[in-house]
Length: 373
Length: 78
Image (cartoon, rainbow over all chains, first blue to last red; front, side, top):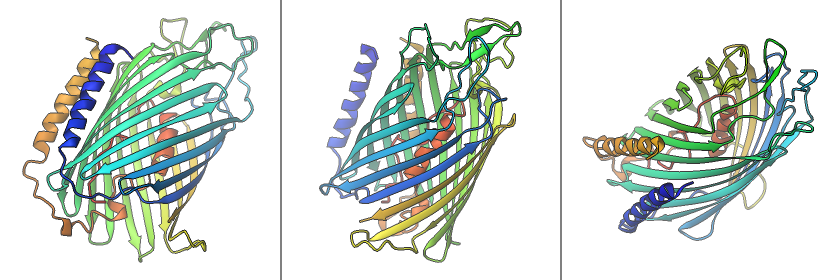
């Protein structure tokens, strides 16, 4: 990150802090004291990099604890682990085969602090993610302030990632490990339009620099020769998101959202999503959702590369495709944990079906338990 | 100046204009009218852990990222 970026970010932080300091004092509530356990099981039919490959499975567990330490300060810590049955595919330079490697584990942990004072909120968080060939350190700071009798909320956040990428290829002579950076900014405004309607607009901008390809992805040209995946070493990404939440007297709520995304690799996308929440009695909530995604390819993507180029890729994330996500979720507060310090219990079960054009399909089942104390 | 900063500035200007004009004409919702807004199903992100896991899944299978979380915001009705 160069000095110009630091100066501009520091100036923005100063303005926001000064704004926060003149805030009127009125108590807000901190995040609730709770422990959250989520376990999910993911399964797909093939790799998005190698269509002829087999699928993988990924069980994942996250544990998160949030506890208020004073009337204005709340702390959160979480830990998660997932085990991907074939996260990385290796193409042998001699045989051209792409054998499955052993299960890869990814461990992630983080810590956060939320400070609230009157109509203001500041959040600080950080964490690390570790896996065999990819380490990531990340941190974020966010500011949020309410205006106009709490009918308008303005927010800003800055997130930073510093990643180190290594290779799993045996006897790899390339200069690994290599680094990649991400600096992401989000501006957000939320507005209460009526006692039943909320809207939100988010503007997202991110800069990525460094090694942005995947070291294990190897191109196979028509003459049988091999090529390394080569991506540009910078990528500027931006997105605009609009969200709406509307309550209905049938004890229901409609969530709708739209995102337009574009970046300097020429990739653009439209995302439309909607969820319907419905109460059943006092203790049961059902949710049904659908999300549609339409993506245009990156400028340098070639489905069938004919020979070496300045930039070349087989990354399935950069190809043109559409995707559909269908989801069902049930939430209940009907069951209680017989531990005295747990005052409220919430249990949920979710099923997602995800499919991309071209034949990629995935399935997710997830169970959650929230204990509030 | 790098193109990224020009875009960032343009984003900020657009955002400020939208922010300044967005609330004009919106009737104020009073505290005693916020019963529905405070409901769990009316939160933009009612289950942050689920959202994190889903975004992680989608970010590793699609070319787009960002805009759905971590940026603050909210209805101010908690």
